[in-house]
Image 1 (cartoon, rainbow, N blue to C red):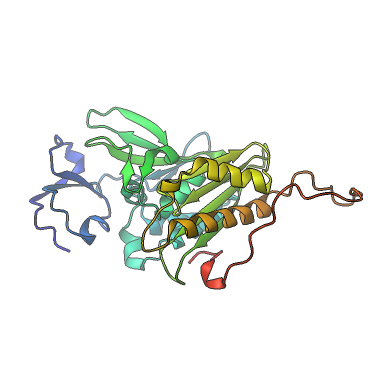
Image 2 (cartoon, helix red, strand yellow; image 1 turned 90 degrees about the horizontal axis):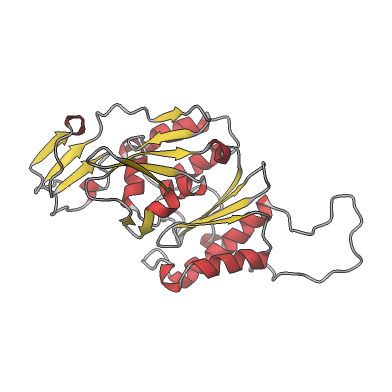
Length: 306
């Protein structure tokens, strides 16, 4: 739509002083989707010339704020790392047309801070850090899980720019599992849970997004039991942090998040105390945890990218 309050579009390379009513312009898929009556000037980042994706000497990966979903998807499909499939799965969670994919940026998705933002899900699950740059040139880094503070709320100061996201090399070697749920076959994510198993130390990370107002990342030095995983999630997410909108009620989001997190736990980490294959087990043992929730209707659960 036309933004009839915007009087000027400036090139970000000129580094002009920030004014009230300014906004950074990346792909513009959000800015031009609804009225923005508070804006007077857009500062265009599209000509900054930042490489969309670049490797660092330590093997970590930098994703520029201006990297489009199309560029990220293409890169992920050719990436020879264990976690590579997760990139495409999160790109597909956009449920957007190719026109949006060609314009929408990773930085824009992060800076919107919406619960269903799949780039938030991806980078938080892979222990990503955002690089923020202030108007005075000073920079700071924050974990993605700490950058998004709530639904549409970010730790972003006036005039500050999200320059890039860095994914550590170790995270790219993790074995991952992806679960997504929606109330509709092609609906917005109501729940998105990602697991990452680190082959170096056997730790397991479970990241819950879309169901909550902000990303929650749970790290376990050893694979948790069913009860430990449930206790960790319920102990960290307050009742008012389960998101409530037309795409899902809080009780449903909590139920599905717990269920999908348990599926991921079973996929990525065998039960603690389970006998080694081929070794004799005990004559009898009592279960140390509660059974998994019953299967929901197919329309209530989507395991693959939608």
